[in-house]
Image 1 (cartoon, rainbow, N blue to C red):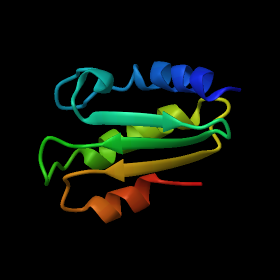
Image 2: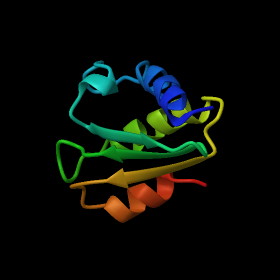
Image 3: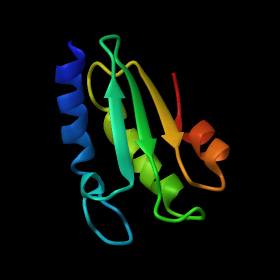
Image 4: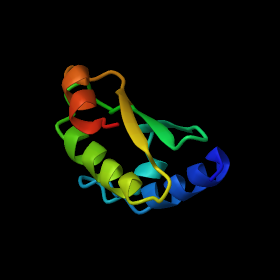
Length: 97
């Protein structure tokens, strides 16, 4: 599967994930900064929460992770977290290869 096609499928999967505090789709929030995909099926998702102490980053990230893992063709998943005090902990919790 090409990176372009896989990226489309990932975007569709993320489209159903909602922010638990607002009910809005995560794709419509500034939280989701980038979704990068290569032809090998490796995915890198960059999230930037609105607050450096956002308590929902674990939940939001996990919801996104679960949705993306269901997409056929995803081989590896890495998260980059920007602007959060627990950046390393969140990235370690969410990322997998």
